[in-house]
Amino acid sequence: MGFARTYSVALVGIQGHIVEVEADITAALPGFVLLGLPDASLSEAKDRVKSAAKNAGIPLPQRKITINLTPPTLAKRGSGFDLALVMAALQAAGELKIPEKIIYLGELGLDGSLRRIPGILPAVQAAVDTGFEYFVVPKENLEEAILVPGAQVRGFSSLAELLVASGIDEKNIKYPPVRKEFAGSSEEQKSKRFLDMAEVSGQSEGRFALEIAAAGAHHLLFKGPPGSGKTMLAERLPGILPPLDDSSAMDVTAIHSLCGTGTPRHELIREPPFEAPHHSASAPAILGGGSGIPKPGAISKAHRGVLFLDEAPEFKRTVLDSLRQPLESGQITLDRSIASAVYPARFQLVLAANPCPCGMNTGRGLECTCSSKERRNYFGRLSGPLLDRVDLHITVPRVQSHELALTEHNESSESIRTRVIQARAAQRERLAPYGLSTNAETNGRLLRGDLKLDAALLSPLLRAMDRGTITARGFDRVLRTAWTIADLEGKSSPAAEHLDLAMYFRNLHSTSPS
Image (tube, rainbow, N blue to C red; front, side):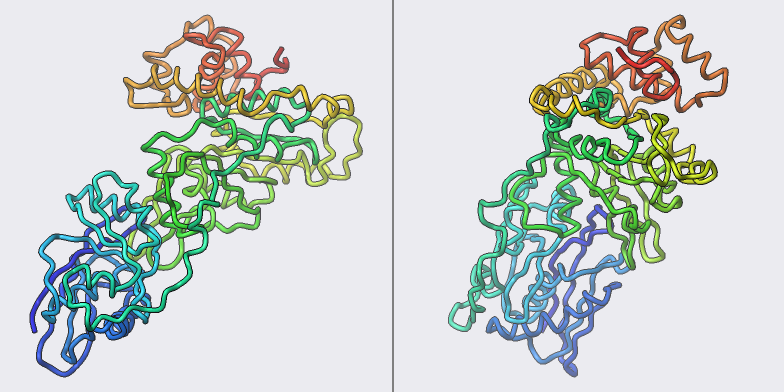
């Protein structure tokens, strides 16, 4: 009987921490003690480990087994430590010897099978960043784990396979029954197909505003009567966004890996995600939360993509206002007594709202049954500070009958996406010296410094600010939008018409765009 050590990874949010799994076996009354702040699911690993080892043909000795998870002050949760626990215990029992520093990640079935766990990608990435190179994971996690550069990964379907590969005599090994191939592992899983802008009838202003939003990563609000196409437009925004670069794709894939939803990942997520929670969603569902270590919410799942809030005034105002901080910082910090988790949350916010509860307050002679107080209270659920962070405010009118027949002449998402990619390339070239990539990320210091526009050009915007119709934050956001419009037209800097159009989309002009 003796001592052994293996290694695993504990995830706190999307950040991974190396955990040393120390096993000690002594000649005392049989028992299994697990130390190091395990949660309930991890505490249950004691029984899973004993049954898995027995059913694999190498039972643990009838001695006192003490396993400590270091650092002891770090909260640990989940079944992903099972494999590291059993390998440490078997080494301490003298059954095998592993010379390399290997990270073990995986859940054990009672029959000794190895089962897929969530969060493999961020766990492997964290270990590689720390200096680890070798990994053992469940076979169902293998293709996701090898997406991390610098990781040498082996995947096994059972503890028996791993023990034989580690040098144990196969004569005593028992393999669990062969399970059917994991659902979704076939090549039927295809990349997501986005809806096409060619299907949208009319709405020239809404289409152009959507293109501006995609090109500069701006937030936008669609306001209009029911059936005017607000949702239809918003759902087509991901289809005109550029594909994710390597860094963004790794972050997005890591978040979705941590959520543990869907089938195993065989490649990085390259298309911007789209999240559209129902208006009854709670704050933890939107922001993230839960007991113990908080889990990511919709805003983190929408990282580098789109968060669409349809019927936005129907959301609780506390939920809407809680978006203000992540809209500015691009991340969300969730504090709990046991741990604090930080998740990325740099998303594009798209809001859709009717003008009033009945939706008929359009100013075109339609009968509205709402009182003036009901109208104020309804749209007042979208607070001023939240709307001040939205760059584009678009009124979406009802589609006219003659516009329905012109669908075949509408521009497709593919051609719009080409212009968006070209505009993003211009932004990256201009903003690269400042460590930025999109106009939406530029700050006031830069806009009034190296990117400062001529004072005569800014005079209409300055007058609006003096009248109190725009805040300092709104001032900067109009400038960001003007730069994006100029990028779409291939101009080196905004002209008067670009600034005027940006102000119009901020509801600062009464003149419609030409």
